[in-house]
Amino acid sequence: MNKIITCVDGSAYSDAVCRAGIWAAKKLNKSILFLHAIEKKNIAAAEDLSGAIGLGARSSLLKEMASLDEQKSKLALELGKEMLAHAVELANQQGCESIEKAQRHSDITEAICDLESDARLVVIGRSGEGNKPDFKALGSHIEQIIRQVHTPVLIANKGFTEPKSFMLAYDGRETADKAVKRIIDGGLIHNLTCHLVTVKNNQSKLMDKFNHTEKLLLESGFDVKASFLEGNIFSSLMDYKTKNQVDMLVMGAFSHSKLAHAFLGSNTLKMIENTDSPLLILR
Image 1: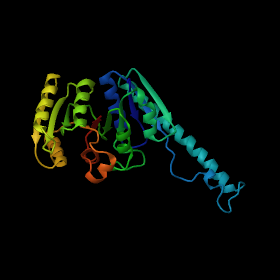
Image 2: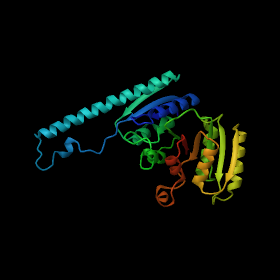
Image 3: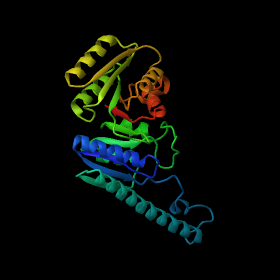
Image 4: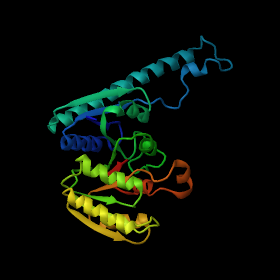
């Protein structure tokens, strides 16, 4: 696991994603791989219309559509190359020593999965190309990537800067315990102030687990500020983040299956949709 896969596109988040990927690559001393995926849009290509009533193989409109399809594909390829070149230039300026780039004709999730075997971290923006800067993550590739990719995912905010602190939203579940182990073993957020925050829920022995987690982090060299809260989970976490000016949020991946999420909701998705801070999802 030697590469920081950093996804670049034409969105408003692209430069911030590059900065986040560069920060992670330098912090972990890993190669950075800039990835651009050219996704097939849901439009009718010329070959899809060849059987339509009244449109024969000699139709001039079909030939013109085929020519436009080819031109559009070439333009998308060249635009992607320019974006990758810009990302590489930024990485060079910031002193990255090992820089790679890749371009794929596929869905971004598929492209990440194809490269994941050698990935240490995946860096993406809150919303992709074609979405407005204030686009909510729900319904984008974000959820799909988090559910399918087993590598930690860093969701960059638009104004990403190097974080000095992070908040670990600990809920006592297995996913949270795995996240704690990832934090201790990983190195990405070592030397950052850790705000360990738990909101009271129905997990058994939650206070004992909370105290044990604080002890583990302290023994691992973290500067820990621990808080056990009560109230609505989402609003309590967001209020704490704002009050304490936390730079980054860290959470375990989804606690429920996708079917259960349809009925129970997900605090992870709420955090993604409503926070303007970078969010690190650990599995």
